[in-house]
Image (cartoon, rainbow, N blue to C red; front, side):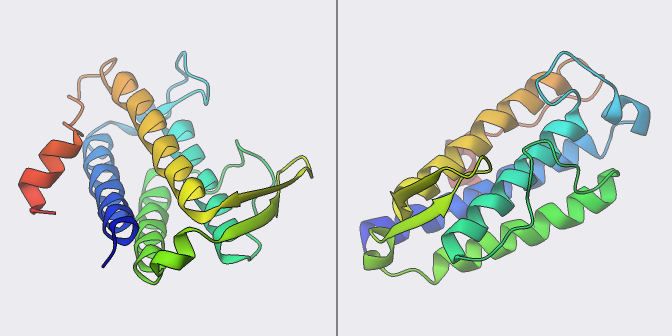
Length: 168
């Protein structure tokens, strides 16, 4: 296995681990607190977690050359915690399976796609995956901060913690 394969497989597993920990903390919130409007770009904990799923579906569709059905970055996919959590777990499994199926050459393959505004773009698969995982980390940090505004302690999400807990 080459460096890119090993790196991105680890990142896909870290991503799923971190999402699972974050959803585990959010599960402890009363529904009103979870849905409460807050000073955040996507308006709530739910809105931010929903946005993460939207963008992952969008990028995975682009990577696979399929339609994601996504038309807006704030498109609500699931109105409730349980539906969103189940979909998040399924998306993380799909992302892991996708990355596991790539060869070293696949990571360097250039992909063409259209943005939501219709602009044509082209980028290498490894750089798209880097963007996807970085985007996840960015918005998980926002949810982490939003959890600090509640009675539920946010979970530790450090990559090193993941490595020590999982051995990956």
